[in-house]
Length: 92
Image (cartoon, rainbow, N blue to C red):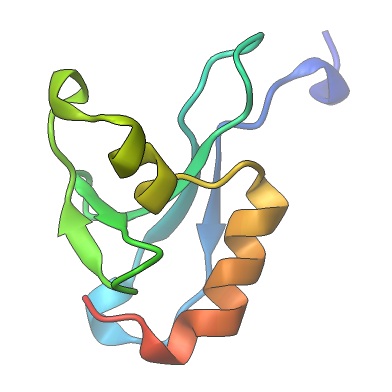
């Protein structure tokens, strides 16, 4: 096995804000399902695209299509660009 054979499941995003020491960009789907990514802090808090704030993430059984549209990204690149473009507005 080589490093290139591994699937990346999360990235750590850099931040200077004290309350956001560890921000993770995480894969939330298992291949071969379509890619989905989330931006999370403190295990259990997920970034809302509409509200631009971190909200408590509910149990998977209570998540619906509306939830996934607001809290998931179709690629790691899309999530990263959202983070870069909105970083100054994001509330913890």
